[in-house]
Length: 327
Ligand SMILES: NC(=O)c1ccc[n+]([C@@H]2O[C@H](COP(=O)([O-])OP(=O)(O)OC[C@H]3O[C@@H](n4cnc5c(N)ncnc54)[C@H](OP(=O)(O)O)[C@@H]3O)[C@@H](O)[C@H]2O)c1
Image (cartoon, rainbow, N blue to C red; front, side, top):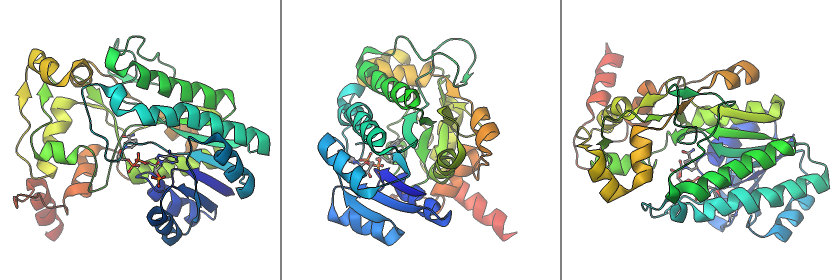
C-alpha cells in the first residue's frame, strides 16, 4: 500500500516508517522541518512538508500523494512544559486530535482512501469504577478532573470521528523505549512520586510493539477501537520502583494525597491513585499481534539498561542483566 503518515517524524512515527517499509509498503511521511524531512528520507520514506492545522494544505498534500491509506500520528508533545493544567499542556495536541483529524478525514473522503488509522490514548481515560483493567467496551471516565476535560474530550472526539468514518483508533498505552521518554528525567531526579497508596493503574507499551500493532491494524484491522497496551497493567507502587531501578535512580519518594494535590494538582492525584488500566485482549485476538515486550518489567530494563544515569551511578537492573547474560 501507499501509506500517508501524518506525524511520521515523531517517537512512534520513526518506529512505524521502517516497519511499514519492511512489510513492502511505500511511505509518504509528513514533517514541518527540513531536518525531520532528512530523517524521514534516511528511513526510506518520501517526505512531504505539512502543517496538519492548515486544512487546505492537508487536502493538497493528500490529493498529491494519492495514498491507499492514511495514518495520523501527529501530536505536539515534544518540548512542552508540563503544568498542573493538563489542558494547557495538551492544547496544541488537542487541536491536532480534533481539527487535524477532521482535515485528514475530509481529504480521505474526497480521495476515496478507505484505510484510516489514528493515534488515541488508553491510560487514565476509563471510568474510575469496578475492576482495575478495562476493555474497549467499558465506559470512559464521565467526570475527568476539570484541568483535563478538554484533553479527554479531544481524545473522545478522535475516537468517535475516526470510527464513524470506518477507520481505526488505536488507544496506545504510555510510550517508552527511547532515551528521551517523558518519564526518564523526572524519575531520575526523584520528581515523580508514589502518591498516597499508589493504587492508580497505568498501561504501558514499548514503541516497537506499538508500531507493530499499527502495521497490523492498517493491514487488516476491522473498523473500531483497539487498546494497544502491554500484558501487565500495574499500579504505580509496583512499576515506578522498577523503572527507577532500571534507570539507576534512587527509589521514588512517597507523598500523601493532600500534598500531591497542593503541588501537582487533581489530575496527578487521580492518575496516581484511581486510574484504571487497559486490556489488550482484543488487539491480540483480532490483529494477531504478538508483543516483543509483554511487560514493562523486561521492557524498562531493555530500554534503559544501556542508558547510563547522568550522575554516574550504575543501574542495578542493568548490572543484574549484564551479569546474568554473561553466565
Ligand atoms: N501514548 C503516549 O504515551 C504518547 C503519545 C504521544 C507522544 N508521547 C511522548 O511525547 C514525547 C514527544 O513525542 P514526539 O517525539 O512524537 O513529538 P511530538 O511533538 O508529539 O510530534 C509527533 C509528530 O507530530 C508532528 N507534528 C507536530 N505538530 C504538527 C503539526 N502542526 N502538523 C503536522 N505534524 C505535526 C511532528 O512532526 P514535525 O514536527 O516534523 O512536523 C511529529 O512527527 C515523546 O517522549 C513521546 O513518547 C507519548
